[in-house]
Length: 385
Ligand SMILES: [Zn+2]
Ligand SMILES: [Zn+2]
Ligand SMILES: [Zn+2]
Ligand SMILES: [Zn+2]
Ligand SMILES: [Zn+2]
Image (cartoon, rainbow, N blue to C red):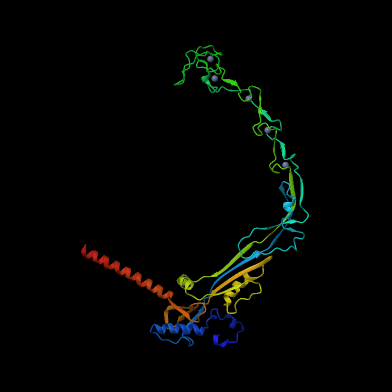
Protein backbone atom coordinates (compact mmCIF):
# COMPACT_ATOMS: atom_id res chain seq x y z
CA UNK A 1 0.00 0.00 0.00
CA UNK A 2 1.60 3.27 -1.07
CA UNK A 3 1.34 6.23 1.27
CA UNK A 4 2.67 9.71 0.49
CA UNK A 5 5.11 9.56 3.42
CA UNK A 6 6.76 6.44 1.97
CA UNK A 7 7.81 8.24 -1.24
CA UNK A 8 9.54 11.45 -0.18
CA UNK A 9 12.46 10.83 -2.52
CA UNK A 10 10.37 10.73 -5.72
CA UNK A 11 12.51 12.86 -8.06
CA UNK A 12 9.69 14.61 -9.93
CA UNK A 13 8.01 15.66 -6.73
CA UNK A 14 9.87 18.87 -5.93
CA UNK A 15 9.06 20.38 -9.33
CA UNK A 16 5.43 19.33 -9.09
CA UNK A 17 4.60 21.10 -5.85
CA UNK A 18 1.73 22.97 -7.50
CA UNK A 19 0.07 19.79 -8.71
CA UNK A 20 -2.66 17.80 -7.01
CA UNK A 21 -1.56 15.26 -4.45
CA UNK A 22 -0.96 11.78 -5.73
CA UNK A 23 -3.67 9.18 -5.67
CA UNK A 24 -4.69 8.82 -2.00
CA UNK A 25 -3.74 5.52 -0.42
CA UNK A 26 -6.29 3.02 0.85
CA UNK A 27 -5.42 4.02 4.37
CA UNK A 28 -5.98 7.73 3.65
CA UNK A 29 -9.35 6.99 2.06
CA UNK A 30 -10.50 4.82 4.98
CA UNK A 31 -9.33 7.42 7.48
CA UNK A 32 -11.29 10.10 5.60
CA UNK A 33 -14.45 7.95 5.75
CA UNK A 34 -13.79 7.34 9.47
CA UNK A 35 -13.62 11.11 10.02
CA UNK A 36 -16.81 11.57 8.01
CA UNK A 37 -18.66 8.96 10.10
CA UNK A 38 -17.41 10.23 13.44
CA UNK A 39 -18.48 13.72 12.37
CA UNK A 40 -21.99 12.26 12.12
CA UNK A 41 -21.71 10.76 15.63
CA UNK A 42 -20.76 7.28 14.45
CA UNK A 43 -17.14 6.56 15.38
CA UNK A 44 -15.88 3.32 13.76
CA UNK A 45 -12.48 1.90 12.91
CA UNK A 46 -12.34 0.97 9.21
CA UNK A 47 -8.61 0.46 8.75
CA UNK A 48 -8.80 -2.88 10.57
CA UNK A 49 -9.15 -5.74 8.08
CA UNK A 50 -12.65 -7.09 7.46
CA UNK A 51 -14.49 -3.91 8.40
CA UNK A 52 -14.76 -2.18 5.02
CA UNK A 53 -14.46 -2.82 1.30
CA UNK A 54 -12.61 -0.39 -0.92
CA UNK A 55 -12.54 -0.23 -4.69
CA UNK A 56 -11.15 2.32 -7.14
CA UNK A 57 -13.37 4.00 -9.72
CA UNK A 58 -11.16 6.71 -11.25
CA UNK A 59 -12.73 9.15 -13.73
CA UNK A 60 -11.11 10.19 -16.99
CA UNK A 61 -11.43 12.93 -19.55
CA UNK A 62 -8.87 12.57 -22.30
CA UNK A 63 -8.53 14.36 -25.59
CA UNK A 64 -5.78 14.32 -28.16
CA UNK A 65 -5.55 16.67 -31.13
CA UNK A 66 -3.09 15.73 -33.82
CA UNK A 67 -1.89 17.70 -36.78
CA UNK A 68 -0.68 15.77 -39.80
CA UNK A 69 1.24 16.86 -42.85
CA UNK A 70 0.27 15.66 -46.29
CA UNK A 71 2.16 16.46 -49.48
CA UNK A 72 0.12 16.36 -52.66
CA UNK A 73 2.28 16.07 -55.80
CA UNK A 74 2.28 18.81 -58.40
CA UNK A 75 -0.52 18.96 -60.98
CA UNK A 76 -0.86 21.21 -64.07
CA UNK A 77 -2.81 24.39 -63.38
CA UNK A 78 -3.68 27.33 -65.60
CA UNK A 79 -5.05 30.81 -65.02
CA UNK A 80 -6.43 33.15 -67.70
CA UNK A 81 -4.25 35.95 -68.98
CA UNK A 82 -0.57 36.83 -69.07
CA UNK A 83 0.36 36.43 -65.43
CA UNK A 84 3.85 35.00 -65.59
CA UNK A 85 5.35 37.59 -63.23
CA UNK A 86 2.47 37.31 -60.81
CA UNK A 87 2.59 33.49 -60.58
CA UNK A 88 6.40 33.47 -60.41
CA UNK A 89 6.17 35.57 -57.24
CA UNK A 90 4.25 32.79 -55.44
CA UNK A 91 6.15 30.45 -53.06
CA UNK A 92 7.94 27.81 -55.09
CA UNK A 93 9.52 24.41 -54.59
CA UNK A 94 12.06 22.27 -56.37
CA UNK A 95 11.87 19.02 -54.38
CA UNK A 96 8.49 18.57 -52.73
CA UNK A 97 9.62 15.76 -50.43
CA UNK A 98 12.26 17.89 -48.74
CA UNK A 99 10.63 21.30 -49.05
CA UNK A 100 10.18 22.80 -45.60
CA UNK A 101 6.99 24.60 -44.60
CA UNK A 102 6.20 25.79 -41.09
CA UNK A 103 3.61 23.71 -39.25
CA UNK A 104 0.64 25.91 -38.27
CA UNK A 105 0.30 26.61 -34.56
CA UNK A 106 -2.75 25.38 -32.69
CA UNK A 107 -5.29 22.88 -33.90
CA UNK A 108 -7.76 24.95 -35.89
CA UNK A 109 -8.25 24.03 -39.58
CA UNK A 110 -5.81 25.88 -41.85
CA UNK A 111 -5.81 26.46 -45.63
CA UNK A 112 -3.39 24.39 -47.75
CA UNK A 113 0.05 25.74 -48.61
CA UNK A 114 0.21 26.11 -52.41
CA UNK A 115 3.61 25.85 -54.05
CA UNK A 116 4.60 26.45 -57.67
CA UNK A 117 7.24 24.18 -59.17
CA UNK A 118 10.24 26.40 -59.87
CA UNK A 119 10.69 27.01 -63.63
CA UNK A 120 7.29 25.59 -64.57
CA UNK A 121 5.51 28.91 -65.20
CA UNK A 122 4.79 29.70 -68.85
CA UNK A 123 2.50 31.94 -70.91
CA UNK A 124 0.84 30.73 -74.05
CA UNK A 125 -1.97 31.64 -76.43
CA UNK A 126 -5.42 30.25 -75.67
CA UNK A 127 -5.94 27.17 -77.88
CA UNK A 128 -9.69 27.70 -78.20
CA UNK A 129 -9.99 31.28 -79.48
CA UNK A 130 -8.29 33.99 -81.48
CA UNK A 131 -7.28 37.11 -79.55
CA UNK A 132 -9.82 36.33 -76.86
CA UNK A 133 -12.76 35.96 -79.24
CA UNK A 134 -14.41 33.09 -81.04
CA UNK A 135 -17.35 32.52 -83.40
CA UNK A 136 -20.74 32.76 -81.77
CA UNK A 137 -21.98 29.23 -81.02
CA UNK A 138 -25.64 30.12 -81.64
CA UNK A 139 -25.25 31.54 -85.15
CA UNK A 140 -21.99 29.82 -86.12
CA UNK A 141 -20.43 33.23 -86.73
CA UNK A 142 -22.96 34.43 -89.27
CA UNK A 143 -24.53 36.98 -86.92
CA UNK A 144 -28.02 35.93 -88.06
CA UNK A 145 -30.40 33.09 -87.36
CA UNK A 146 -33.49 31.56 -89.01
CA UNK A 147 -36.78 33.34 -88.54
CA UNK A 148 -40.35 32.50 -89.71
CA UNK A 149 -41.60 34.81 -92.48
CA UNK A 150 -45.23 34.89 -91.24
CA UNK A 151 -46.53 34.81 -87.69
CA UNK A 152 -49.94 34.71 -86.03
CA UNK A 153 -51.79 38.02 -86.44
CA UNK A 154 -51.26 40.16 -83.36
CA UNK A 155 -54.63 41.90 -83.88
CA UNK A 156 -56.88 38.85 -83.48
CA UNK A 157 -54.42 36.37 -82.00
CA UNK A 158 -54.58 34.26 -85.19
CA UNK A 159 -57.65 32.31 -84.05
CA UNK A 160 -61.33 32.25 -84.94
CA UNK A 161 -61.66 35.97 -84.16
CA UNK A 162 -59.93 36.74 -87.48
CA UNK A 163 -63.43 36.71 -89.03
CA UNK A 164 -66.71 36.62 -87.12
CA UNK A 165 -68.32 34.86 -90.09
CA UNK A 166 -65.87 32.13 -91.28
CA UNK A 167 -63.49 32.10 -88.28
CA UNK A 168 -60.59 32.24 -90.73
CA UNK A 169 -61.67 29.03 -92.45
CA UNK A 170 -62.95 30.79 -95.60
CA UNK A 171 -66.34 29.13 -95.90
CA UNK A 172 -69.22 31.31 -94.84
CA UNK A 173 -71.66 29.81 -92.33
CA UNK A 174 -75.32 30.35 -91.85
CA UNK A 175 -75.67 32.85 -89.00
CA UNK A 176 -72.51 34.69 -87.99
CA UNK A 177 -70.36 33.91 -85.00
CA UNK A 178 -71.18 36.03 -81.97
CA UNK A 179 -68.60 38.80 -81.50
CA UNK A 180 -66.89 38.68 -78.12
CA UNK A 181 -68.44 40.96 -75.48
CA UNK A 182 -67.14 44.57 -75.47
CA UNK A 183 -65.72 44.10 -78.98
CA UNK A 184 -65.76 47.25 -81.05
CA UNK A 185 -67.76 46.88 -84.29
CA UNK A 186 -65.76 45.82 -87.39
CA UNK A 187 -65.82 47.68 -90.65
CA UNK A 188 -63.66 45.51 -92.91
CA UNK A 189 -65.00 42.70 -95.10
CA UNK A 190 -63.35 39.25 -95.03
CA UNK A 191 -61.09 38.52 -97.99
CA UNK A 192 -61.64 34.81 -97.48
CA UNK A 193 -65.40 34.45 -97.20
CA UNK A 194 -66.47 37.97 -98.37
CA UNK A 195 -68.72 38.54 -95.34
CA UNK A 196 -69.19 42.27 -94.66
CA UNK A 197 -68.07 44.04 -91.45
CA UNK A 198 -66.70 40.85 -89.88
CA UNK A 199 -62.91 40.66 -90.51
CA UNK A 200 -59.97 41.59 -88.30
CA UNK A 201 -58.64 44.80 -89.89
CA UNK A 202 -55.03 43.65 -89.52
CA UNK A 203 -55.18 40.26 -91.28
CA UNK A 204 -58.60 40.67 -92.99
CA UNK A 205 -59.49 37.04 -92.26
CA UNK A 206 -56.16 35.37 -93.05
CA UNK A 207 -55.11 34.91 -89.38
CA UNK A 208 -51.44 35.55 -90.13
CA UNK A 209 -49.25 38.57 -90.69
CA UNK A 210 -45.77 39.16 -92.09
CA UNK A 211 -43.14 38.59 -89.34
CA UNK A 212 -42.32 42.06 -88.01
CA UNK A 213 -38.83 40.94 -86.83
CA UNK A 214 -37.43 39.89 -90.23
CA UNK A 215 -40.06 41.68 -92.36
CA UNK A 216 -40.65 38.36 -94.16
CA UNK A 217 -36.95 37.89 -95.03
CA UNK A 218 -36.60 34.67 -92.98
CA UNK A 219 -33.33 35.79 -91.30
CA UNK A 220 -32.97 37.90 -88.21
CA UNK A 221 -30.11 39.23 -86.10
CA UNK A 222 -28.58 36.53 -83.80
CA UNK A 223 -29.90 36.96 -80.29
CA UNK A 224 -26.80 35.48 -78.64
CA UNK A 225 -24.19 37.79 -80.16
CA UNK A 226 -26.56 40.60 -81.14
CA UNK A 227 -25.25 40.30 -84.67
CA UNK A 228 -21.59 40.71 -83.65
CA UNK A 229 -20.71 37.22 -85.09
CA UNK A 230 -17.82 36.80 -82.60
CA UNK A 231 -18.03 36.66 -78.82
CA UNK A 232 -15.65 37.04 -75.87
CA UNK A 233 -14.07 33.68 -74.93
CA UNK A 234 -14.97 33.14 -71.26
CA UNK A 235 -12.35 30.52 -70.19
CA UNK A 236 -9.46 32.87 -71.04
CA UNK A 237 -11.52 35.86 -69.92
CA UNK A 238 -11.14 37.40 -73.37
CA UNK A 239 -7.37 37.77 -73.01
CA UNK A 240 -6.41 35.14 -75.60
CA UNK A 241 -3.73 33.83 -73.23
CA UNK A 242 -3.25 31.36 -70.43
CA UNK A 243 -0.49 31.16 -67.85
CA UNK A 244 0.34 27.54 -67.03
CA UNK A 245 2.35 26.08 -64.15
CA UNK A 246 2.71 23.02 -61.91
CA UNK A 247 1.25 23.43 -58.45
CA UNK A 248 1.73 21.19 -55.40
CA UNK A 249 -0.16 21.46 -52.12
CA UNK A 250 0.91 20.76 -48.57
CA UNK A 251 -2.01 20.36 -46.16
CA UNK A 252 -2.09 20.09 -42.37
CA UNK A 253 -5.30 18.29 -41.44
CA UNK A 254 -6.28 17.93 -37.78
CA UNK A 255 -7.83 14.89 -36.13
CA UNK A 256 -9.09 14.53 -32.59
CA UNK A 257 -9.79 11.52 -30.39
CA UNK A 258 -11.45 11.37 -27.02
CA UNK A 259 -11.61 8.85 -24.21
CA UNK A 260 -13.87 9.17 -21.24
CA UNK A 261 -14.75 7.39 -18.05
CA UNK A 262 -17.72 9.38 -16.78
CA UNK A 263 -18.97 9.63 -13.23
CA UNK A 264 -22.21 7.81 -12.35
CA UNK A 265 -25.19 10.18 -12.56
CA UNK A 266 -25.45 10.65 -8.78
CA UNK A 267 -21.86 11.94 -8.57
CA UNK A 268 -21.72 13.89 -11.82
CA UNK A 269 -22.29 17.47 -10.64
CA UNK A 270 -20.19 17.07 -7.53
CA UNK A 271 -17.19 15.63 -9.34
CA UNK A 272 -17.56 18.12 -12.18
CA UNK A 273 -17.37 21.26 -10.08
CA UNK A 274 -16.11 20.42 -6.62
CA UNK A 275 -13.29 17.96 -7.11
CA UNK A 276 -9.54 18.19 -7.54
CA UNK A 277 -9.01 16.82 -11.02
CA UNK A 278 -5.41 16.30 -11.98
CA UNK A 279 -4.55 17.69 -15.39
CA UNK A 280 -1.60 16.91 -17.63
CA UNK A 281 -0.72 18.17 -21.07
CA UNK A 282 1.45 16.03 -23.31
CA UNK A 283 2.90 17.79 -26.33
CA UNK A 284 5.53 15.31 -27.48
CA UNK A 285 5.44 11.61 -28.21
CA UNK A 286 8.15 11.17 -25.59
CA UNK A 287 6.13 12.92 -22.85
CA UNK A 288 5.31 10.40 -20.12
CA UNK A 289 1.96 9.77 -18.54
CA UNK A 290 1.90 10.74 -14.85
CA UNK A 291 3.33 7.97 -12.69
CA UNK A 292 0.28 7.87 -10.45
CA UNK A 293 -2.24 7.45 -13.27
CA UNK A 294 -4.39 4.46 -12.29
CA UNK A 295 -3.52 1.34 -14.25
CA UNK A 296 -7.05 0.91 -15.67
CA UNK A 297 -6.91 4.35 -17.25
CA UNK A 298 -3.31 4.01 -18.37
CA UNK A 299 -4.14 1.29 -20.87
CA UNK A 300 -7.07 3.25 -22.25
CA UNK A 301 -4.96 6.38 -22.78
CA UNK A 302 -1.76 4.71 -23.93
CA UNK A 303 -3.28 3.20 -27.05
CA UNK A 304 -4.26 6.73 -28.15
CA UNK A 305 -0.75 8.08 -27.66
CA UNK A 306 1.16 6.03 -30.25
CA UNK A 307 2.77 8.14 -32.95
CA UNK A 308 0.48 8.23 -35.97
CA UNK A 309 1.68 8.14 -39.55
CA UNK A 310 2.55 11.65 -40.87
CA UNK A 311 1.80 13.20 -37.47
CA UNK A 312 3.74 16.45 -36.93
CA UNK A 313 2.32 18.02 -33.77
CA UNK A 314 0.00 16.97 -30.96
CA UNK A 315 -1.60 18.15 -27.80
CA UNK A 316 -3.04 15.59 -25.43
CA UNK A 317 -4.99 16.81 -22.43
CA UNK A 318 -5.40 14.25 -19.70
CA UNK A 319 -7.68 14.92 -16.75
CA UNK A 320 -8.36 12.31 -14.15
CA UNK A 321 -9.89 12.13 -10.72
CA UNK A 322 -9.05 9.29 -8.33
CA UNK A 323 -12.40 8.23 -6.89
CA UNK A 324 -12.54 5.52 -4.21
CA UNK A 325 -15.72 3.64 -3.30
CA UNK A 326 -16.07 2.34 0.24
CA UNK A 327 -18.71 0.14 1.84
CA UNK A 328 -18.78 -0.46 5.59
CA UNK A 329 -19.61 -4.05 6.50
CA UNK A 330 -21.45 -3.04 9.69
CA UNK A 331 -23.67 -0.53 7.82
CA UNK A 332 -24.65 -1.91 4.39
CA UNK A 333 -27.27 0.78 3.70
CA UNK A 334 -24.74 3.37 2.52
CA UNK A 335 -21.92 3.63 -0.02
CA UNK A 336 -19.17 6.20 0.51
CA UNK A 337 -17.20 7.94 -2.22
CA UNK A 338 -13.96 9.78 -1.56
CA UNK A 339 -11.93 12.01 -3.91
CA UNK A 340 -9.57 14.99 -3.65
CA UNK A 341 -11.56 18.08 -2.80
CA UNK A 342 -9.60 20.70 -4.72
CA UNK A 343 -6.62 20.50 -6.96
CA UNK A 344 -3.48 20.98 -4.90
CA UNK A 345 -5.22 20.02 -1.68
CA UNK A 346 -4.65 16.83 0.29
CA UNK A 347 -8.14 16.94 1.77
CA UNK A 348 -10.45 14.17 0.65
CA UNK A 349 -14.10 14.94 0.07
CA UNK A 350 -16.39 12.16 1.29
CA UNK A 351 -20.01 11.81 0.23
CA UNK A 352 -22.45 9.00 0.90
CA UNK A 353 -25.17 7.62 -1.31
CA UNK A 354 -27.84 5.07 -0.42
CA UNK A 355 -26.86 1.53 -1.31
CA UNK A 356 -28.96 -0.23 -3.94
CA UNK A 357 -30.54 -2.55 -1.35
CA UNK A 358 -31.58 0.46 0.74
CA UNK A 359 -33.11 2.12 -2.31
CA UNK A 360 -35.03 -1.06 -3.08
CA UNK A 361 -36.20 -1.31 0.50
CA UNK A 362 -37.35 2.32 0.51
CA UNK A 363 -39.21 1.75 -2.76
CA UNK A 364 -40.83 -1.30 -1.11
CA UNK A 365 -41.85 0.77 1.91
CA UNK A 366 -43.24 3.49 -0.34
CA UNK A 367 -45.20 0.92 -2.36
CA UNK A 368 -46.57 -0.62 0.83
CA UNK A 369 -47.60 2.85 2.04
CA UNK A 370 -49.52 3.40 -1.18
CA UNK A 371 -51.33 0.07 -0.75
CA UNK A 372 -52.22 0.93 2.84
CA UNK A 373 -53.48 4.37 1.78
CA UNK A 374 -55.64 2.75 -0.90
CA UNK A 375 -57.09 0.24 1.54
CA UNK A 376 -57.89 3.02 4.04
CA UNK A 377 -59.55 5.06 1.31
CA UNK A 378 -61.64 2.09 0.22
CA UNK A 379 -62.58 1.43 3.82
CA UNK A 380 -63.58 5.07 4.37
CA UNK A 381 -65.58 5.07 1.14
CA UNK A 382 -67.41 1.85 2.03
CA UNK A 383 -68.23 3.19 5.51
CA UNK A 384 -69.48 6.61 4.31
CA UNK A 385 -71.13 5.24 1.19
ZN1 LIG B 1 -9.56 31.97 -75.30
ZN1 LIG C 1 -64.42 35.29 -93.37
ZN1 LIG D 1 -56.12 39.37 -87.52
ZN1 LIG E 1 -39.25 36.52 -89.08
ZN1 LIG F 1 -24.45 34.84 -82.90
